[in-house]
Structure formats: C-alpha cells, structure tokens
Length: 388
Image (cartoon, rainbow, N blue to C red):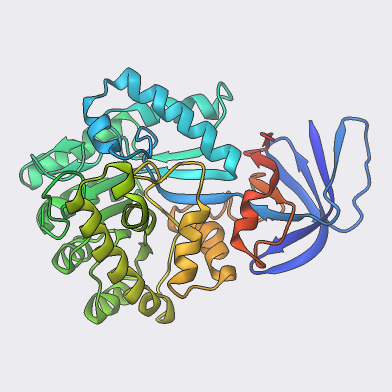
C-alpha cells in the first residue's frame, strides 16, 4: 500500500518547505512538489496547511514504569508478565502521541525485547524500540537490573544481555531518586566495571548510556568510554570540556525532577524527594544553557515512565528545555536529527528524506510558534504504518 501526503509544509532540518511525501510500504519514496497519483492503490492524504515533521525520538524511556507517583516502587513489585502489560500500554501511548522511536533504558526483565520483536512483526502497535533489556548496576544501588561487583561480573552480564538481544549497554554510574533518602550524587559503578561492559558492547558495534548525576560519576563514565550521558545534573565547566573532548551526547531529562518539584507534594511524593527534585531542577536549568551555548550535542530524552512523567506527553520536556534557554528549532532538531545520530539510526530515521523509514507526524499548527502544537496531532506514521 502507498500513501501520498499532499500539500503539507515539510520540516527540513530546521526549515520548512512545501512538498508532497510519497510513502511506499515502510519507506519514504519521494519528497517533492506536485507528486501525482500514478495508480489506484495510493491513499491520498490532504495535508494542506498542516505541518509534516519526522516522528519524535525519545532517547530515555522506561516502558514498564507507569509515570505515576511511585513508579519505581511499583516496578520492583511486578512480575515480568505484569511489566509486559504496562509496557504494552506505554507503547500505545507513545506512538499515538507522535513518538515513533524510543531507546528503552531498562526494565525488570526482558519485556522490552518481547515488545520490540512483536512491533517489528506488526503484531502490536508501538514505536521502534532500541532496547538494553536490563541496566547494569551495583547490589542495592539505584534502579532495577543486573547486579554486579567487579569488572569480570560486569563483562559477564553484558555478554548475557547481548546474547538475549540487547542493542546497547545501560550503566548506573550514580544513585538517583528512587527511594526515600537515596543520594543521587553517590558514585556507584566504578570506571573499570563500566569499561568492561562497554568494551563487550563495542565488540558488537553497540553504544552505551550511563545514568549519572554527580561530577565524579560523569567523569567516571567519560573515562570508561560511554556514548551518552543521561541526566548530567551537577555539570560544570570541567565536565563540559571533557564532553567536548570525548564527543559525547547529553540526554538531559528535565521532566521527572521538574514535575516532582511542581506537583510531587499534591501527588503523595515524599517531602525528601520533592525537595531534592526542586534542588536538581533549579541546578539543571542554571547549567543547561552552558551545555547548549558550548555546542554540546543534546539528544532529546525525558526518562518517560519516571515519577509524574507520562509516556504520552513529551511536550513537558520540550517546554522545560525551552525555559532553560534552548530554541524551539533546536529542541525539535534534538528530538529528531540529533537523537537519531545519538542512537546510530540516522540512516534509517530522523528526517523526512527519500529512502528513509516513514516515521512521520502531521500537526495542525506550527510547533515553532508554540511547542504545545505538538499536541495538535492529526496523523502518525511509524515505520510506514498509519497509526492515526
């Protein structure tokens, strides 16, 4: 089946152009003016006056977390079968909101592999999933995942995850805000542990991501050779210099901390976590503009599924990035082109280009006028499949 999106205003790396978009199967076949219907099996979609963009790519998602007030506590009590049900609902929410690709950053088991494979076979609805399966962490440390002590165990766990179907390696370099009294800045995995796991992934051309809040945790992850730094809370000029030197991507994830700071108390989040979130969100907003102004590569990601971070609303993250000093145009680029490059899928998606996968959203109004216009969605294609 072919689809022809006619007369839309098409996003072109920060600019707009009037063009038609012809989709043939899962691929974009042509992007040009005045494409004519050349057979009877083409669905014509009138996009006159509407805005046609690449689907959003979210580089930090937890499908089996529900985005409620205490999702980590809930996750820790789930069986894998229950986690799959939550994750399946999350997939539906994400793709209907216009998120056509996610990097799934860890669950309690291998639920993300099962869903990824089902979506690829068109057995269920959802975005393209790039999955790690489980994070690698220390015993008793932040989040859930494969617990290791020492580089040999890290190497072993990475090998097991790769065998099971992992597409990247997720590492927990520091603590977080998963429970009462937890210190997000505490160093957890050591350099040699992370380096051992990263090296195993590199044997298979895999990238790596490190959850890290503190300066020491970020320095450790950079020394270990990580591809992307997640959260990057207590960043300073020394870290920025190291990031530039290593040419690493930053995934900022404002949403959980800003949302808990705003709405945590009324939703029953502990006073400790609310206050810590206020401190973290304030610091992130004060330092984010430095990353941006220095030209650090910022890939969109929001920790979807974390406290008060609903899968179906990515605009919250975009608005917080804007409030911290990033332009609307660059936010959209971070959620399309830069994110695709960070996940090593730029040859497949991230732009509306001939030969690429048909990951497309059509909006009623221009998101460069107001990022809230991403909520005015009238059409989604994910991997060539029409969702809305």
